[in-house]
Image (tube, rainbow, N blue to C red; front, side, top):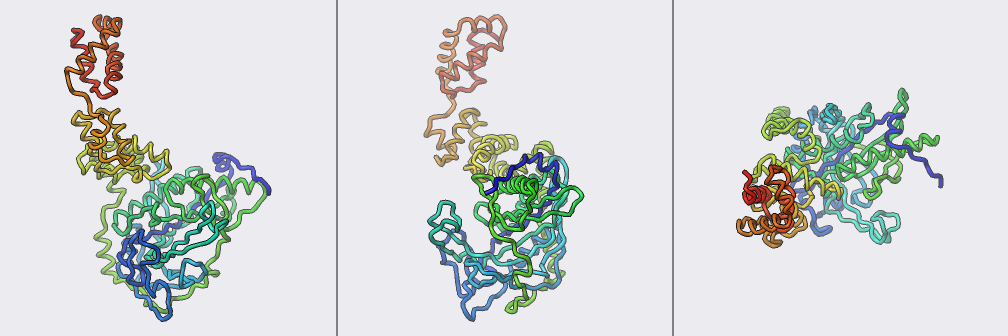
Length: 499
């Protein structure tokens, strides 16, 4: 096997231009499936939410889910799309074991929503991502490969299929190709998916939880030399976190540059992204539209939204996330750069909910953008999965505000919260971490520190008040960090007769 020499990312982007495109799938939060009345509850026992329609038994006919059509139109409007006055469903034919019908009911040449855009900001510059289409279709089932080391079909001894997900309403959002991003292509891709997630969440049509698969992203990447035609693209399938979207683009740029440098050609194919390694591996050759043999779905009537109804839905759209961020930035009193950092971390709603639970804006930001963001980065997870709820963070900050915890103790309490030991007050009590406010005990600790450090005490008496920090440290050590540093300092100065 020939080993390809891989360039650095900086080297690759200095010699090649990157073109990206993103295909994002959103599972709608409807109570029933797209073409039948089966429930859509996540986590149900395998194959318990199925019926003759979604199992494609002979003679079973589909019926359209009106709530799913409305949700799709609302998504299209929020993405600045034009809404078709007439469109229809189509059959997308292929063989996969996770589709009982051996075709997917989708849309082809007549999508419901077209020609929109999303604006994102990266490094202070705004980028407009064109939306080619937003269409409605049905999701596939879920295949589980067992007996192997990787969870993929290669090396597995058997495969199991759960059809609960088959038929759940799925919206596909396809961008136009996005060239001209330079070395910022990975960051722009991540920012786009984050903005898309925020927009859809604001509509209330999906929980858009990437870790559960209700938001999945396929990342298309190609390279070309400056001035030449766009290169052959690859499609990295089912990338399931914002961080992985960025890493998938970056890894494909490096890999493709290495192939082209060695005189090779890029194969149009699907690829799998490996979270542990941060790179991709080949999947299958990518089909074209002709391969799918699309034709109009004969068992469903066309979709013809009333323009007056569409206008009403548009008038009822919620505040745009970008507008909301600008408003919150003013309310919180932070800079545009700070708000961009909050948005990039996926912390806007978390901080907003923490403030609603009683914390100050500064207190809420401190924990989400500090300790919890650090933990999420170390574990490679979304901030919302870091192990604490907004209510718990607000409760933690309240204990600090009340003087029951200092910041050091609060960090220890937070460790207990994310470890599942309970709410902040419970962790504080169980670990005995409350700040020592007993003046008698603190005075004794201060006297002990002064007696053990006479030279430092003399410096303080002579006016070198800054030296009190050493004695404060000694008292904090004696009290295991449970004293209030400000109170300790005041006691030290008072005992030494310094005003």
